[in-house]
Image 1 (cartoon, rainbow, N blue to C red):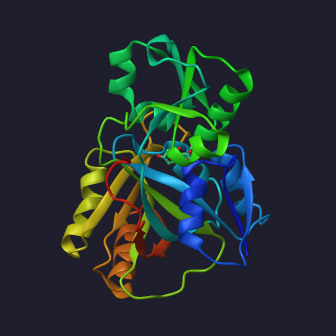
Image 2 (cartoon, rainbow, N blue to C red):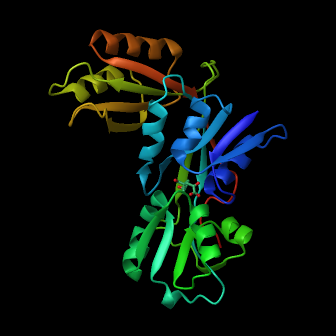
Length: 282
Ligand SMILES: O=C(O)C(=O)C[C@]1(C(=O)O)C=C[C@@H](O)C=C1
């Protein structure tokens, strides 16, 4: 089985992939950006991909849902939550007091917003924590630090000059596993709906939510994203908790379609959590 994730070596995505798949017959493929990872599975170059969907501090990773929805056949088939502890990684002979800039992927910079503000340092975006740290290593600069994991520091032999700098110590990221497979029924699954309202009219979101309330479907996540067709026109992502039957889901789809909305189910899946340390690194 071929699995894609965000590289290079040492990203959180790699950690999530190795923990989730934990199988011998997996062949891993690293891509430089999250949209490239999703494209690899969308274009059948790999069987599956694992990408970040949501983080405790940052919220939704927009580049993931925007890329996911651009492929008609992609489905979510699993979910995996990983604790995310962020550290300041630096070349040798670097002193914390001399850091003027920090580098990482944008969701990580947001997860450390308070720290960056407190230290009054500039921030620069890269495609991943590992590409930021690799560029730092090659530059040999001592006035810059990268933000990433403890294992990334080990892989590149960088020093950790400040620990657990994320805004919330109990920071976690929820990854999704995506593929072109058809939905297979298993017990206690979550369901992800994508609903594009038929008409742009007042009360459209509440009319959608009323359907879920009437059918007693408990929602665990809701997100709106622009359709990119016209300013102010959105589509809604709604994730139903694992407590409803296939029949209830089908009933919701029928009612929503009768109301004139376009409905896609982009996954029925179970959630798993990392067994590694829940709280921050020590
Ligand atoms: O840059 C990395 O190390 C990644 O795997 C990406 C990513 C993200 O974009 O959210 C994944 C999980 C963490 O939230 C931090 C970074």
